[in-house]
Image 1 (tube, rainbow, N blue to C red):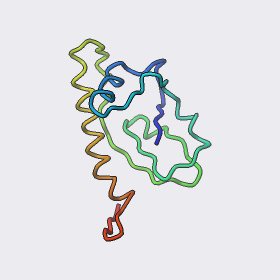
Image 2: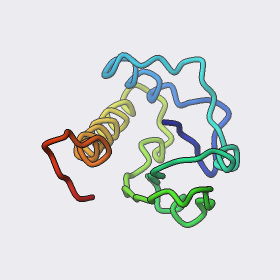
Image 3: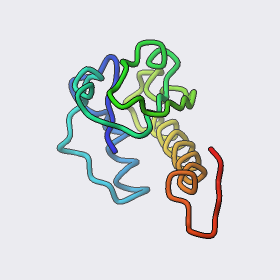
Length: 117
């Protein structure tokens, strides 16, 4: 799994780093945002876009991965890096987590489970 964007910032948003660490124990503090173009030589089974703008400019990937689109508002759109901007990132993380939990059985069905995407 990896992440990239159409207009990556120089650094990850501090609220994104904090919510991933607090909520899921994932430390991304040393990671840097990447542009979509850095992913074009990789093979994916699924490509999930989270932003309507990215959906329009997402490049084609080798192997014709299945594309999904989850229209999720950008929690940084308000531009607020103060403490009161954190809840938007927490809500966004919860929304993505919920969607991944629903997608998981499609990606990794158990032998007795037949799930159609």
